[in-house]
Image (cartoon, rainbow, N blue to C red; front, side, top):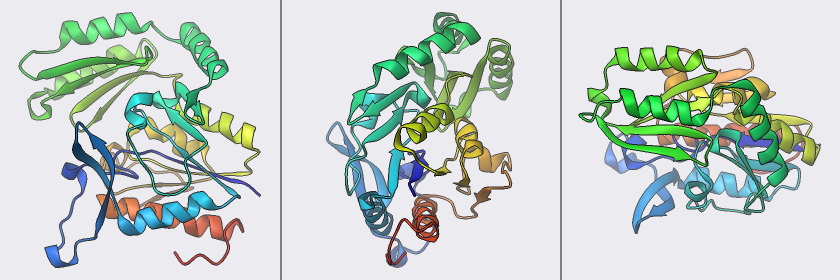
Amino acid sequence: MTVLVASDLDRTLIYSTAALALTMPDPVAPRLLCVEVHESKPLSFMTETAAGLLAELSKDPGVVFVPTTTRTRKQYQRIRFPGRPAKYAICANGGQLLVDGVPDRDWRRQVAARLERECAPLEEVHGHLLATSDPRWLRKARVAEDLFAYLVVERALVPEEWVKALTEWAEARGWTVSLQGRKIYAVPRPLTKSAAMGEVARRTGATTTLAAGDSLLDADLLLAADAGWRPGHGELADAGWTAPHVTALARAGVLAGEEIVRAFVHEAARLGTLGTMDA
């Protein structure tokens, strides 16, 4: 039996300083491991316990661990997970499938063909974002991998009415809008993590898929998996979203990430891919 574990990264598996949610007294706060450095500064963390569990999970020949993210390939490759390097990684919300760190050209061609058939072009959506955003709260506007667009904003200043209007405008053109922290994403609806996960499952012969995620862009991934988990924070938690096979965790912040990795380990052990590992 092969089990595929596809996990979202930011605010699911790894956490910035602002997202750690260390609400407990300092003496009992968990020890943290930095797993990402950017511009000579520590950027993302896991608990040491979560890192150890993930390292053990990734060593098991019956488990295929697949980091699954909306990050670009360059942003993803800043992360240094403990344990064996992942053979497969899903970046750009499913638009890039990396095999041993190299983009799979056949997959990218399939994605491009589907986007051309099913939704409005990136240029139209990016232009609309620039034309309707307000310089008072817009900090950056970016295009990722020539696949989708996002804005970096001062979130407290962004009017809810603007986000609602953008969502309706985008939906009519086959795109999805997701608000995550200080970023507002506009992503083509056919560009999904679940499709890329299905491709990896096909290539590896995985018989069971496990997944985790916190945002609207992870909903399709969770629905497509055999079992899933979402933390007690993020877009999905705020909306009260769940599904019969998805466990909605109460815990938030970096300890939710640890609970998710522990759940992956327990489920893999239950399915018989892990030995006597203590989770």
